[in-house]
Image 1 (cartoon, protein in one colour):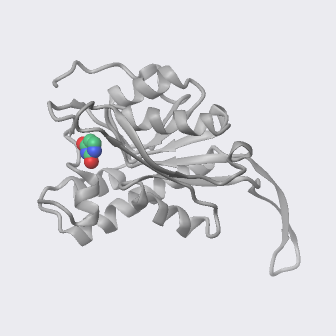
Image 2: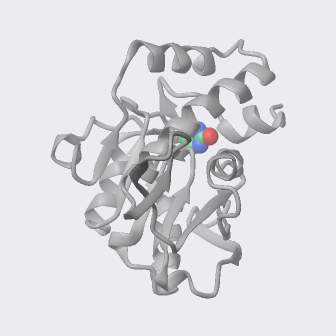
Length: 225
Ligand code: URA
């Protein structure tokens, strides 16, 4: 499937928050896109990029005033994340992001969604879901490193909306996407925000992103071949 590149300009800065394309970020992407990368390097450096998109996702959430006393006895008029956050990784690849989210937000409630494409119908099929009972009141970081055709993403978002989550309370945190995936999510869910570190050129005939990263889950969990 070689598709013409869709323009996503109109979504940038509003629906889609693309990390600044610094040389450091490009260097990290170089390490993880290299087909000869060792698995331990892939896990290490993809984790470093994932940490960055998670931090950028947290930037979009509400904060509340929280003053602290500093070691010199002064008051720092600070902020802290407002209560009512949760993370929802889309299994299996999203588990890589759960690890990084837990590292920066220890104690955060974590839901789970397992959606896979049915090999016969080619449609996303829900296999498992477990979400916090009060998820409708929460801000949700939906975690999936790959946003390609948008099939799994739109099915996951639909599921969260059915559980009462507001679109405006949903941030889709992603490592790599492609115009087709952005368009699929943004057209259907105009209030959902996407944070990503790279927008690829296109999808190939096997629905892999190009230049891309290959099968993220297989490379991360060591199940290639
Ligand atoms: N999933 C992946 O792991 N890689 C892609 O390029 C697309 C979907």
